[in-house]
Image: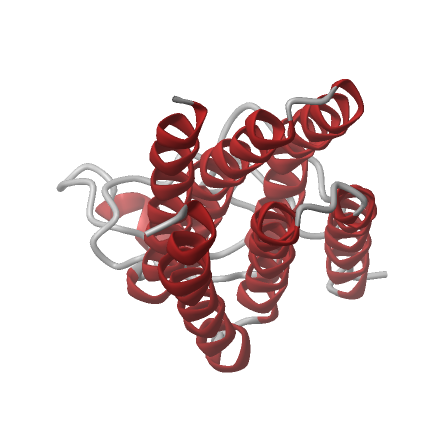
Length: 91
Length: 146
């Protein structure tokens, strides 16, 4: 079993299964904060999947996408928490 | 040799991400879920990025992986703090078995200021269902009702 087979048949399905588990919380989450956390964790897991995928295909160019995704995850979480806090502020 | 290291690192990273996803389902509380996202997922992604850096064995890929990991490491606690603060203001309930709430009565709802002592002005502080501390706090509960 080569490294590519191991990644393709073991690692990537496990990562996809964890994405599914996080999606369950993303749809079910009781409050909106849970959904924002689930979105953050989805993007973080996506960065990991991109890193693994670049190993499978032997192209390191995919890592640029992972960098941009990390930026977007931080910005979206900050913006969501800012507006959630602002929405509940009494005037 | 490097293949064995890559296999070990990639397996550990995937296990940590899977644990983070299971914790996202199983944790009973928003604040505990925030703790899952900051710790386990950051470690798992860091291991995956490290394994990719070892696989390519290249300066540009290594620097990219290190920059991404540094960015995730720096921003995960900041975003967790922000979303935890916002969810505390929203009035997200603590788990009913959680032992204590250090911020009870200290965050002011109108001004969003953290005071250093308990200020029980009605309608001003963030109200949560208070966990049981013991018998001493029952008088405070009565004052809150008034």
